[in-house]
Image (cartoon, rainbow, N blue to C red; front, side):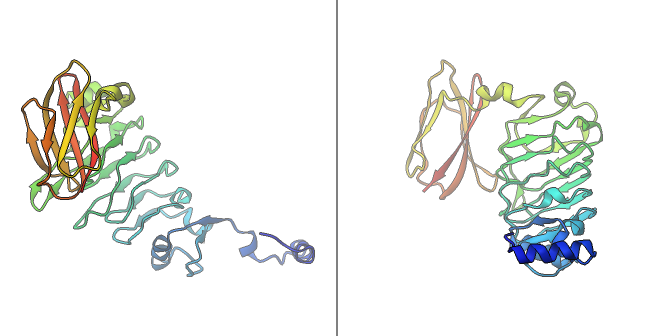
Length: 290
């Protein structure tokens, strides 16, 4: 804010006389997404009632429950100042990212596609949310990275089902980070109650296995592709199975034969996930079918 010398002088006089308006001194939080701010107004949280790209931080820092489902929100910037937030529902919005690392009091997180497929979150990290008790998300069709290692898995319940028009589908997850990979792999408590509909492994550090799951030795081209997709593996390992998953999470193609090309001309246009199982592990690649 640029102020003239006269304005500054007046404010100084006001300050010493206790007359400075609260709105000039109050801390604000930027809310660049107009749908997000409108939702806060509709919920009676944004006290000025005007969509102006900001909200008084004092209006939001004590909010405990926030239901933002079905609000058309594409940018959740500003959520970091909801310091006391314990329940957040962002289901069926237009989000591609979700940063809740500052919401350390969060106990319940709901991130679902319910009737729509516009929630395109590819990564979810709750490692800072040590008080999280419930993570529920339906049909996160593009979820490729999931970090649940928050040091307190003992109180956490995870439910991530996937279904499209009544048909079970599969999330494109390869590795899920947890506190205790041995207990999780053996389906011991607390992991026995978790449900994640994907073909993946548990690990305490997925970066240690990234070469296995994101190997630079496996090439998939051309991308975008129209007719023939080429898959090459420069390693000595053999390709054992190839699956293709569409953007709704449905497995639309699978082949167990050993080969390095496939005809995709008959597949619908859009984003596809190619899962390549080799003798060394599983590799995933995202391609665009035109």
